Amino acid sequence: MEHQISIKQILVDLIGIIPQINNEFGSNEKYAQLLTFLNAKDYFNDDDLAYPTLKQIEEETGIKTYHLRKQLKEIYDKLFDYDYDFNFDFSQTKLIINVEYFKRYASFNCKPLKYLPKIGENITLHFLRAKVGTDYFYVQDIRHSFIENKQIIDLYLKSGYYNSYWYYRKHKALEEGEIGIGEQYDLYEYQMKERLGLRW
Image (cartoon, rainbow, N blue to C red; front, side, top):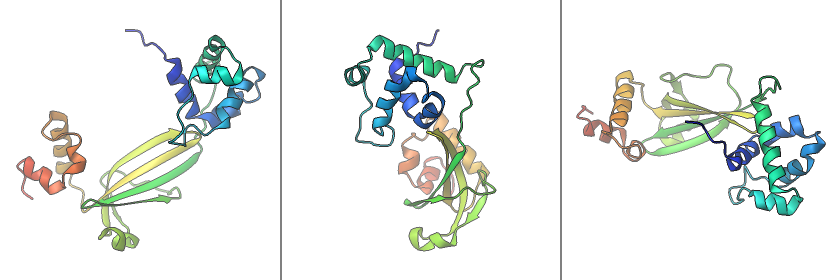
């Protein structure tokens, strides 16, 4: 089945990496009006601001919808054209550490680490004891997001010790529907173990 590219989704995708689009296409007069419009407001970071429609862009820039669609697709296609040789630049790094202990949470920003802990590794954070009630954690998950010109690394820490069997069993239960997707966030760990017939 052939994938149909949505111009509306292309617009949203380009707004999500607008600093890189500016660096690559900002000096091209052909796209000047479009990029001036897209840079006038921070659509990506302002939750109260809706993404613009093609009609809105046409009304404010005077660029006909047909030409808008063509420009958006041209820009988007060049990003993935081997011969065009565009290089994405996510050289800025932001690390966010998220911790959880019996439904008590804390998150904080951290400068990039020389060594990024892997899933299952243990971490002691003495300065979090007053905030969440413990200082001993393990890495439960790591998520990388590539947004604007940043690589955002979310490190998810859970209190206690890593148990490779429990990690496997919980994911198996989620995959097989023994635990609902939402329940993994709503239930305490001991409740999930009880549901699965495991000793707590």
